[in-house]
Length: 71
Figure 1: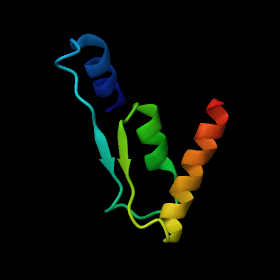
Figure 2: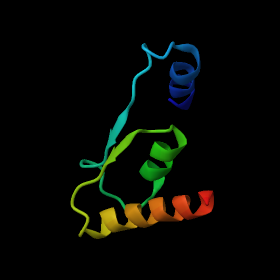
Figure 3: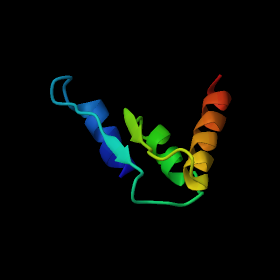
């Protein structure tokens, strides 16, 4: 999957490229793997709803950790 996103971003012309959205609404776990996937593939949107649930808070904290590492 990572190779596919890399090919789309590097070989297609600007008008043929497209963005991708990762939807988190059906995958409830405290693992930050979905956030890692979204950041690693250069995802334009990561759809996470229901921030008051522990699974979502863990993912938001993982995203904050990645953002802090990039600074």
